[in-house]
Image (cartoon, rainbow, N blue to C red; front, side, top):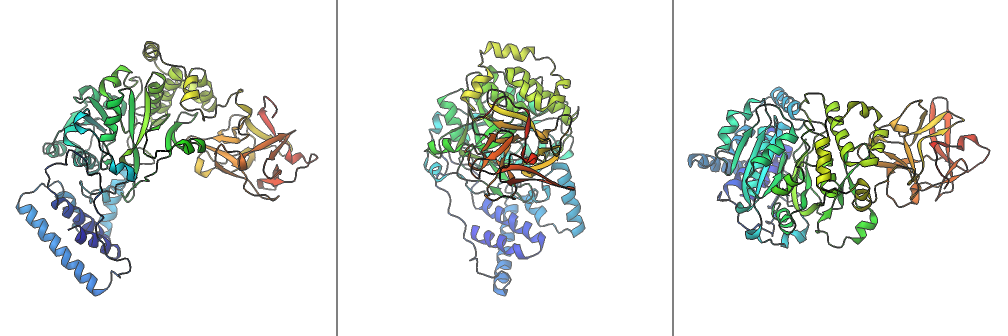
Length: 605
């Protein structure tokens, strides 16, 4: 069966667009029909299934005999579908197959595509044509596949999935992936927490579908409460010993649950998160790397980001599937013992909707005696979106920034001033009443943020006098130009020149670090350093991810000059009419274009 469906999928590549959906859906219905729907085994299939056979890559799918074979196999697939319907098999997969075989005009396809994208910020058109039980690639390291777990000894879990105006197929595919790929004894229940959705398909139609889904029920909030409160409500209603939070557009991979529960079984203060694979929002292709080197971090504007382990930590990491300590987590996908979740304060209920709660709980876990780990053998795919399509009652910016202020005031101690220095306008937003959270911190006897920086995230650059040689705009007085990243987005940053601003300019805020002699620019989701990989004058430096290894990113201070350590060339401001750029030149003490001054330069190097 898999052979047949795989050929159909390949054959659809060079036929009409609608045939792709037919082939995809037929592949998945055949897989579904070829397996008994009696629930997964108690022990996961650690040895992966052999890959389906496909046509040799050299075959031309346009050849007549190939097309004839594909038509025959399509007929066979449709006969199997008719037989399944006549035997009253589950119709869960039928809806996607029926939709995939529906013929639409180009205008109708585009209209449906645009509406779905506008509602979800992902390709609902293709999601609606993919089985809720589709097979996905096992992305774990090969060592994970040989591991076994004492399933009978592990605690069970309630999976809490909050949602607001989620697409039907992404929500239900999340649910079915849990049931299809988890030992039944470990799933106590699945709670779908509806945060006052307004879309019709999430009301009575969803109720009717969920009635036929094992261990699954819907909790409906009477008014919009936000993701944070929806999670707490779900955890309050949970019956399992462990609460596992998932977003409403995920797919759990094979063997995802057992390694999470095993860590909590050994230590109830460990909070664990799966490695999050990517589900492409345009194609819904599931991808992930078997090697895990990335952990969750925060930046000083208090945003979450991903960062590879420093090179020296990677060299010490001998076991590729050992748990990976992480300073923070993304927050949508994690497991925690239910009682421990409430013991350490669940979530800050003074926060609204969404934003900052992942950093707040990450800091709190670490500072108050717990730990946070990524588990390489646990894989869950997630649809990443550029923005959230739903609205914030008080506006997204004001809501999130006020949430971040609460994080800073409760957990950052004196380091909150770094946050406010980068986001000075946030001070005016206030925090609301934080007395309860401060009392919680006192009651739990939580450690100071300085301890967190020294012990949990020691490679975090702290932009204060103790760790910097200079900070602020770097000005060339002769040209009245400042070094500028030319963009607040890390991927678009360049080492450029721009007229110095009188007030605060985020693009001109650089840190000259004491330990690594970097010219560093902190962005919302990571840092970039001025990097010069060349060795000839006249060439320009670039912005590159800070790597903490000196080399191309090491700059020495010689008087007013900034000297690139490897090449011994000096940084120079080059202005010719409207053309302005940074260039590397032979150092010349009489050249004022090579003189640079930090707004704040505390000590010499």
